[in-house]
Image (cartoon, rainbow, N blue to C red):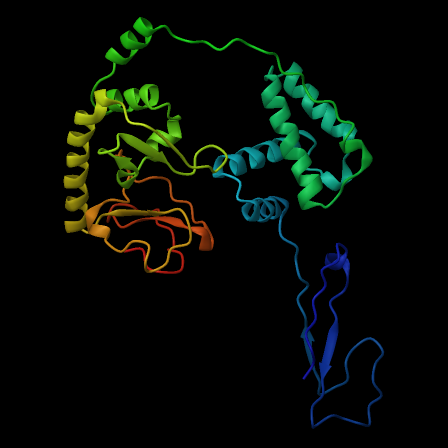
Length: 308
């Protein structure tokens, strides 16, 4: 049997496919073999040429092992796409410091972006050169970054903060008091889980905060009683979802059989469930969000192991 081979060089797509003759037992030995075609009685096998993955797929493959957040991944892909479209879909290997400077100047002059946004776009472009293309030319270190201005933080006085919180109602009132009293960021509050609240010790456990770090913060006494009543309603909603086979399970890391040992207690559920199904993003073997609601058609394949 002929051995298959693959080519991974950049010029592989322009090379003629290799012709491998498979000899037959009924070969005609009287006819001379042609130098351009296989002899008679032989079968011709055209081996496919290996295609390299697209640039954005290579960027994702370089980001995922580094455990960057999903928002950072989306932001980097956004700026890389804009950089490529700005220069007419040219490959980054064909461009250099001049093209990067033109793109950053257009962002600052035409689109009037801030200095932090301009540096964010530069970081995304440099990630491609350093970690995707494995290029580190000398001009990368000589690129000029935008100077960020130093601003004084805007701090509300006590009576202004109280007046602002009094305008909120329902779940938004509860979330606003947690943001203000516990010092939570927006996504930290939205991702808060039931099991991370300790009412006896009056503290919260923030999981995978900024920089993928955990921390413990205080639980405001003003929201303790309303939060208990809110979690009772969340538990009733979770039991209804289990009864109707429409529960949503979230597993941010690799799921095994011993992680969700008691799925009916709702301890791993979020404190603030969404009225609609969250956006599904398959994370391969690193986790997934699985929705079993009959009306939801955006389901992702579960990772290895049982979720429930």
